Length: 159
Image 1 (cartoon, one colour):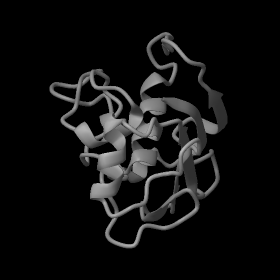
Image 2: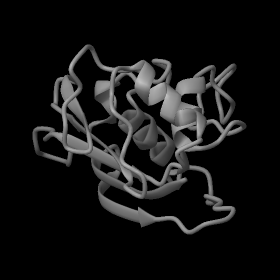
Image 3: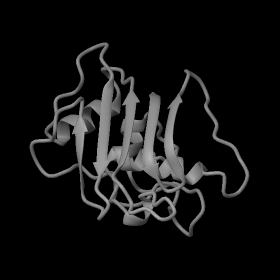
């Protein structure tokens, strides 16, 4: 389950910290309110390919680095544990959260860490497509079972 999502310097968002509670959490809002930006940020934390246009550029300023982090509570028997191990990472200890952080440089490069430990191999990508951009645009399921498994949702478009 996604516990928190923190977003810094992504598109329109300067600084945002969201905390989610158990149960159904729904993001609603008018067109242009930023729902897709939040899904993009979650995708970045999960390892989606970086689109440099996601980095916020304040008027009259050079874009700075962006950062996202997502904290998950994952049961030991959850499918995400196998995905984490497939990528050569140790799963979090029982009762400990999984913390995924990603720092993105203005040019689009960056670095991801899991529980403050950089991965030993190449970055694990969550499908390489922007969240909510499956099929013909708009919100839709992507083909990223890895990201969906880590996000704790088999029917969502989080990856």
